[in-house]
Length: 171
Image 1 (cartoon, rainbow, N blue to C red):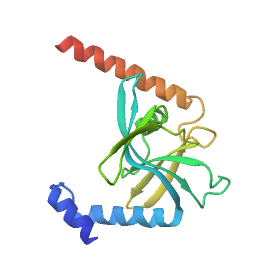
Image 2: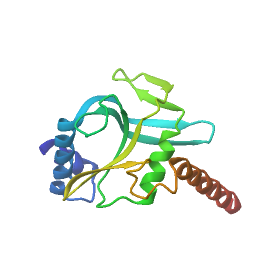
Image 3: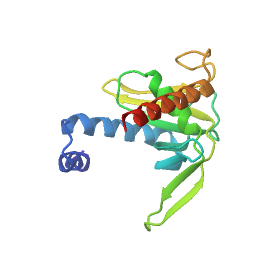
Image 4: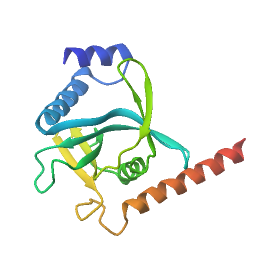
């Protein structure tokens, strides 16, 4: 708590230290119970072909989920909102289509590697109610199975095209 609090205060975030420290501690406890092996953590992912980049929170192996192999690769994005939004699904679908991951090694050296394909796309919601995990795609998808993960990624590409169109018309 002390480290998290000092970090929040030094960076001038407009949040109460107790609020953030509690969420971070809850997330750490969840990871202690479920994390088997981190593969990628807080790293930039890029799709050079489509022209986008983002930051994936965690790609890892997890334990303790009934019916899911401990060899399944999870792509996780942590959220502090109370509920999932359609945008969260679009973000997960988009990151799944990354071509490369840019890793910063402890030495400061940067390595560009192919992005490994995840088996499971998920958001982990950490809020005052605890931790909830929502998986995207398949029969458990919160928004149903009518729209696939591919549909979500295509929606992102269309939104990106609209954004670029309007950006060009303003210049």
